[in-house]
Image: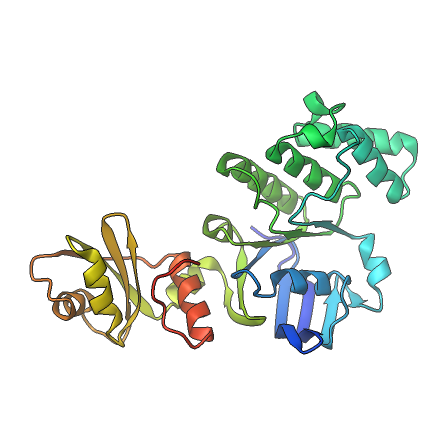
Length: 319
């Protein structure tokens, strides 16, 4: 469970960030409690990275107020940098240096003496399974090894708050799972973590989520709350000619979305429909089809709120 749930690590009020005529973050307000893992979920171009950079003081908001760890941002951004870690989507350390040399360089940046750098490097290499590759050049490492090193570098100075911008986009599912176990270890030790992702299984691991679309905050809450508040019931349809069935159902205003998953069609029907299975059977003329109700998923929430925020019907296309 998150620690210090009564204290805010980040508060943002009506934050907007513009680049010329383009608005990347549009009137976003957040209250992120200490000791939790808070997720940013959104399609490409939704403003996740810009929002993170604004919260950690790398970008100045065009409008609004930001307070992080009790510091006013961007006025006190320099003081904040000593208390946060930041891991970007693209691995950003030095390929021509070894694992140890990269960690030593980070330690020197933060002003640690040689003894402390060595001690902390030993500790991090043990924690993140880097000992066997400690002398290896970073350019020759696998994606998972680079990811572990990047996380070790981001937490070298034991930050109170860790920003992770799509940190697992280039690694396999097994390494992603191990990475998240390390995040929960950090959270258990009191570190607050803000992580952006486009993986639904990662989003479900967060204590709370904000879903962004076109720079706007379109939904916020725990993963379970977001699924409970979807406003639609899910009907799964089995049978033949699912592509034609899908198109028939998409013509119904009561249907939020319809997407095929293998040999089944997943249909989101508005909560105002009292018997969604019967509605689907009748609307698609499926007297003998296999139909059953199932629980909404976070992907259902994501697709529904982002398409509604865009003023579009979801046609079941790619995310």
